[in-house]
Image (cartoon, rainbow, N blue to C red; front, side, top):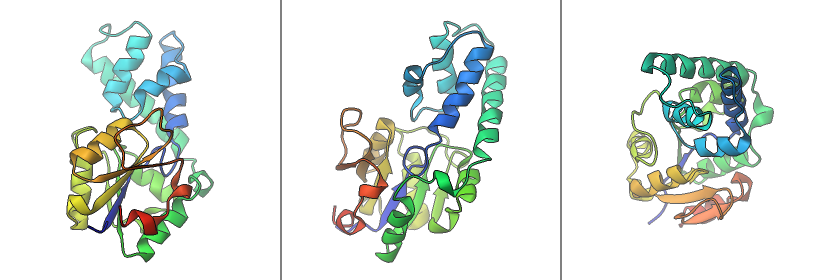
Length: 217
């Protein structure tokens, strides 16, 4: 069974926007009167914006102290700060090996999709000049369910016209690996083995990927 499509998560796989999310969340926490550490921030990996806010408020002992409206306003403010930061991004922030990996898959005739919960994916891809490499872009504006729900990847396979069993997903978050498996796809974990489980293969980054091997996973 040959792999016909490769689906990539954005944050932590193609680009590291996690630092900008962290800077924005930390700014919000500081405004609310408490500190939010990088260790706390680990809990937000692969989690939706509103759930991230709940975790942040929990860390500060403020969960349940705000109305739904106030929480929406806080999440919007955090996102404004985040968008300000990522608007300044350029090609120098593409993670090592990404362009080579995407090109190699294209050369093998493998279709490429983005599968990200980020609502700002298009802004980032355009700034990095990576948009032309993708045959389909599924982001937070097209999906309603968060990973580990497989919606984002199933939608990607559908847009590419490829059966899920012929797809491979590149993910750095446990919820993303589970989403790939729930979609009936192969999963390549990007990161370290002590943080991730249930994958078919693991690499430190896309610079370690050999597409000619992946197509025969």
